[in-house]
Image (tube, rainbow, N blue to C red; front, side):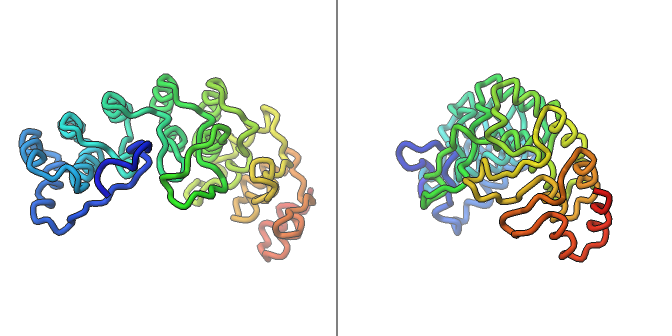
Length: 293
């Protein structure tokens, strides 16, 4: 695929491949783009002699962003080089995204699978970056559809009623970040934030999401809600308590129980209550935790 996306698609939605990876001049060009001590003039000279349609210039631009060489990235952008989906994962600062915006990127442009930049930055817990994106018109209700039917990732467009940004804040960030998104129009009814906080990733330290869960319960979220409202009736995880019990996040489970979580609520996809699930898992710590409730 040449560096330009199919007609009508944004560069950030498409993954570009290098058409001639065996080109003997390619390694030197890419190394110059990502070198911490690389010379912009050298990169410009190397780029000017390259095929503009073989994808290598886009990969050079991506390497420049990855290395934090925004001066080299600017040089390539000024030569008309376009970014691609792979570039976006390395646009990891306000300065980097400002540079792309200068050359035509929009903060609501889609990535593959209907993703957009805002939820990714929220998950990094970078409040200054999030504030900048919101100031540029980032839509906090934009994100990937749950059950896309399109064949190709670049065909999947973001949906307008996504909870991705709020769910990312609940799972990885702070109550202040969550409140910031709501203040900019994020609709809580699109998301399942209490579930997201409860089932935070395995790299989250035990108990680390308790402040977020307490905040969410404090603003009125139902501690016994089922997440089927945003999951097309599938009820993927059931209640927040089940989200903590299944992966063994005992401290978070205790926090939910203290807030009124009901261990007798049935989880449809396993067809048992949370207490029954804990008992069958033969995890004594989980069973003992729920005895008083």
